Length: 163
Image 1 (cartoon, rainbow, N blue to C red):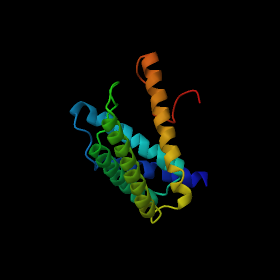
Image 2: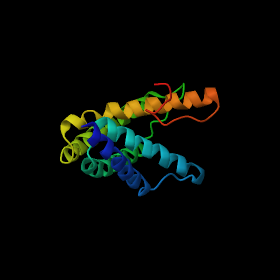
Image 3: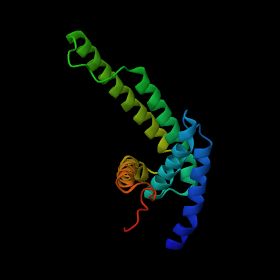
C-alpha cells in the first residue's frame, strides 16, 4: 500500500498543478506566482489528506473551484461591512436580514455542491474536506508567523522541518 501511495502522490501533485495553472490567478501580477504556489500547495495537501485517487482529484477539484467562485459571487452581493459604532435601527435590521439571506444562500450552495461532489467522491472523503481545508489554512498561518519571526524562508504547509 505504501508503494502505491508513493507512486500515486507525484502523479496527483502534477495533476493538481495542471488544474491550478488552468485557472486565472489573481489580478496582481506580482502576486500571481505566489497565489499559484499557495493554491497548488492547498490542492496537494487536501488531495493527500482526503486520499483522493488521481481520477477522483481530476473530477473533484474543478467542482471545488467552481463552488468557491460561486461562493465569492454570493458574498459580493451583500454589503456586510462592519457596522459603525452608531448605526440606526433600520440599518441594523437590514444588515441582520442580509446576513440571514447570505447564510441561506451559502447553505443552498453547499447542499447543491454536496450532491455534485458525491457523484465523484465518496461521502467518507467529502466529510473530511472542511477540516483538511482548515488544517491547511492553520498551517499556512503558522508558516507565515514563523517566517516573520525568523526572516523569510520556510517549507510549505505539512512539510516543516523538525516534525
